[in-house]
Amino acid sequence: MLKNNQTMNQLNNQTKRYLGIDWGLSRIGLALGDDETKISTPFKVVSNIKDILKTIKEEEIDIIVLGSPLKMSGADDLNNNFLKFKNNLEKKIDIPIEFIDERLTSKAADALSGDKKSKASRDALAAMIILQSYFDKKNARDL
Image 1 (cartoon, rainbow, N blue to C red):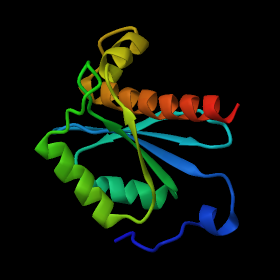
Image 2: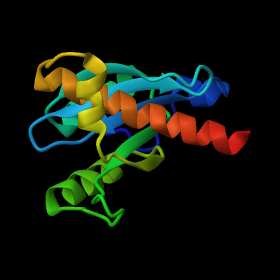
Image 3: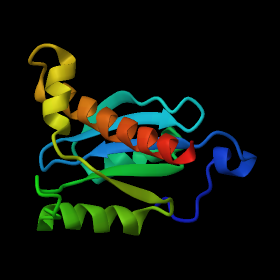
């Protein structure tokens, strides 16, 4: 369990490490980034919360950015499976979770790849887009 477990980054007041998450029932795309470079990179695809917790520990993650499902109108599209995932993750960690609109990230990932990559690669790219969108919005607010 990762509750009350400060990372070395937090203890040393260094650059914060971020984990972007593109949640799906079958696959969960992950991306990494930090607040110094504000650049997100695709990391990997996992299938369960245990793998996410392992990544959080191994990569010394300080903040999670989770893609939140929204309808095209902007209204929440939070289904029970997503809510169970979100609640389970919140119970098992003691680091902040930021939520960001994930609409059209899979389509953007397809466009970015230039060809039809595997669905797994697409999920990691979608997580990268989610995290990069977060950095871009945060950077715009800081200007």
